Length: 129
Image (cartoon, rainbow, N blue to C red; front, top):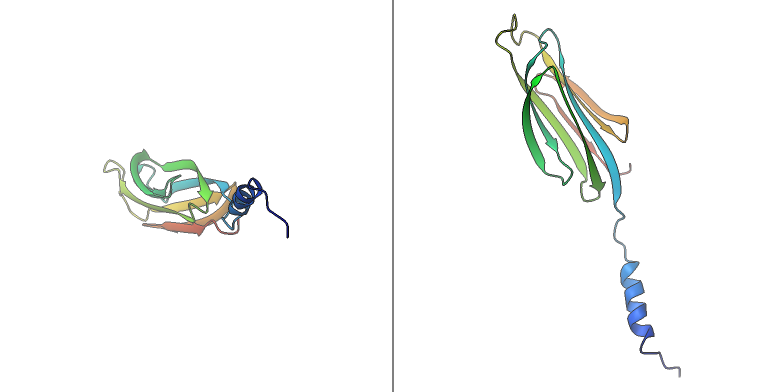
């Protein structure tokens, strides 16, 4: 019967542990956009989005559009969301009349989700990308 070296057993355990079935991390560049659609050019746009750590963050900015780019790591972050709402500038004529927001999520430069509404919500999975 053969004897196994005392050095071979720990080395074998390390190799088996490192080759385990853990999912490989893949980085993705996520681009978020909110754009006013309709007669209102400027508004307080509120965006709620998934940040690089997978948490929901909310921010408000005055303008006709809002955009942000983050890098996320799949599978730590499995999906990303963007929701938007707006409060029209009261100085605008007919504030809020038929104005809407368009939300767009792009993953690695390719559009993944787009929706236009008064309170649009875009959501997409990172699985298989």
